[in-house]
Length: 411
Image (cartoon, one colour):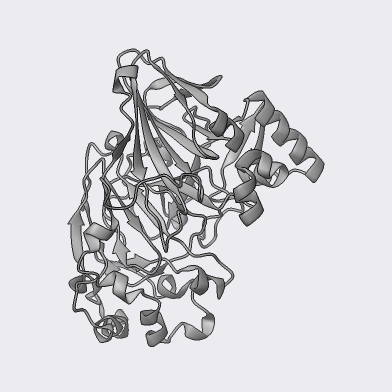
């Protein structure tokens, strides 16, 4: 892990920000999961999916503009942290945020959180993952962590194939009782505990998404997922077997106070019951893209892909920008922005931006940047230089940046 003294951090961060005129180049950040099988669609070289070692599991995630450590056992010191790359130097985005504060992420976010409190990722698996939940802020605070609301968008560019199970179980069937869920925990070591019998699977559709607050059970399926979310990696797995593979009890209780590790009633009460058994679950959480203005005649189209609030707070949001061949779009947003290019080639401000065919582990790419709050507000150009291919960017934002964003159900 590259660390900088306070003085060097400020100098290096300021140099990178000034040189890029408010745009920072970020290196790819890869994260393995020991209990999952990689889906092999996020452009990592086939030889590198076990680059952390087979004992660590395969790489099935790439994190974007992250200052959040990955909560993996035996993890690398900097696992999950994004790196800024500038003039041969590499230093974490976390160090950069710490050094520049409001000059980078804007006063409203810096003054409230003193950090970049969100991140996004590609999540790519061969099959489904266990039915699980993410603790809310109050529950996570009991173990010194933060809660985790999250959202999903399924980029068509990365989902030419759906892999083994392009469906996601979400919530619990209306009428399910707490006693039934408790019974699933009681029989954990007897094999399949049957938690999915109490839920419903929804077919996943590329180009759509979902908003998932904390304390809601969900078992994500096998589409590549772009996931803007809160800056936390807490979770609890409630399914004992997935595709015949054991899910250790430790993954159920890893973010639970130690004296509650065998308290089945506490584990059941972690769930937001009304939200899980909501008869209108899809209407409350499903997201269709929404065009922002009618700009197709100008050679580009911007769309909302993640929007809505959680307990009346806009904690994150995301947009998808498509720029036609040869066209240039001037983009303005309300705050700092993490960007990944998923199709095409061009420039963003003065930096080249290109979606690669394949990336070796540890090598650079030119597909990811971070935009300062000031540059996002004053505007920057995105130009498509890729011949006949549209250029497509996914970009996400922190809390409160877009108060005018749509509500769930507005599509």
